[in-house]
Image (cartoon, rainbow, N blue to C red; front, top):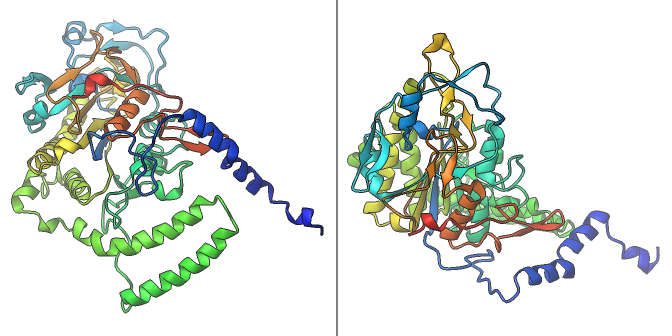
Length: 469
């Protein structure tokens, strides 16, 4: 073969080279001209001074009703059981037959000095409202659970993109080299769409969320096999790393290989730190009781909230805790009432615990679902099992800490709670605001993939300044 023939590269490597060579550098220079982007340990950010150093994202999967939690509507009481016509609005697969306005079965109060509207069943959270910024102006695009979950958690309705936590992990990394930058606390049954909700997507694999198992040992194989010393383990890892790096050198651009190397090293380091983080027995009995640990109704989510506090305290950048089954098409008083009881004490404990430790001021806490619920329902279960359908046009959401406007309610829905009407913003703007509070600029936090630079917001968004203190 000639020297010229020897110089040919496989097609995949040529394409990879083009995507990361002078053309890409030139485009990046144009996009970020005259902008100095500080870098931390090889990460793109921070881009500006951060208000929050870390984030805890409380994901209420299933779609909690804003109308039955934090956004009461007197008009629904007036119109209760009057026929309702949604017109040309997109409806979920559960919609059928005639629809009727449904009042909330819950009593609301105005709590705290701020006078925030809140369902009285939130007995503990109502004592925290002056640390919370309630937001009533958000909306999404999908009325179906999998696509809506993807939308809220990744910015893309169709999956395959990085989770919000993956973007933050990529942008900032972990504050603790012995722990992952992005930890997920799921239920035994994963949310609609599964692990793709916290995937790395097209980012290098090392930025994906690390799920901790809800039952049994949160991380399998955390301790070495019997008889294996740390010295022997280190020697085996060094040999494996040598072989893997030789394999990687002949395969440029295979981020999953690099991630595998990094994950082995991280797993080795985690063995020294994770057992202590997971050991809740070190907490005082008063703290365990505050989170509802030991109570059958609150134990599960209480453990997640307490573990979230311990993880961010140890330097984990982004923790996402899931609470499921908010999909109340029927018997909403019974269903939502039970769910509120299961998360109320743990969430209030989390906010109070962060505050008393001086962590709330620079920890952003977010509460939301994948969409809200409608002001109407059909007759099912004998005509008295009032519930609500899916609603992408309005949703329940609040923020605490991390530079947000404590003790305020921002935005509003219309008189029946069907649509966000004031300070109205797409979920992409919520994502942009989240990044902004963490010191990241959505327009700068990009990654070259499939021929273009991609970002969390998909094609840009704006900061919701009304949410920021």
